[in-house]
Amino acid sequence: MPSKEPPTVTTEKGVTVISLGSDYENLDEWDLDPVRKAILDATKDPDPPFVLIDLSKVKFFASSFIELLFRVWNRMKTLDGGRFAICGLTPYCAEILEVTHLNQLWEIHDTKEEAIDSLLSK
Image (cartoon, rainbow, N blue to C red):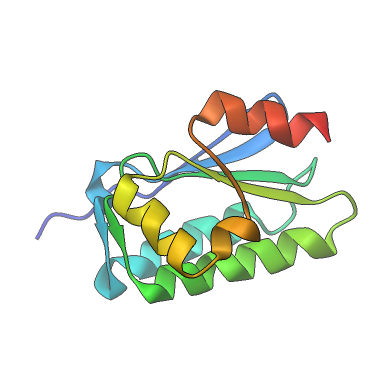
């Protein structure tokens, strides 16, 4: 099995953007280790403390990924002015967050640009 590209971490307008590519279309337990490491490393000490996770290429994620999102959210809310958002949810992934009511807890946006603007505006 060929190795997967790690998530891409960029900074756009001062926001740390973590994008999961098409290698992570189905993000299950077996794919989570490299994703977990990349996301936790990228969110260790972001400056400014704004983090966006772009899931536009992800069609499915398992409950362990939700736990990882919780860890990032908890980390960000402990930072002074820390903000966390998610963008690009496919209908299935959006439904998972709606059923679990996490869409009421986390900032969710359709596009990366919309999310970045929102993170910077508050």
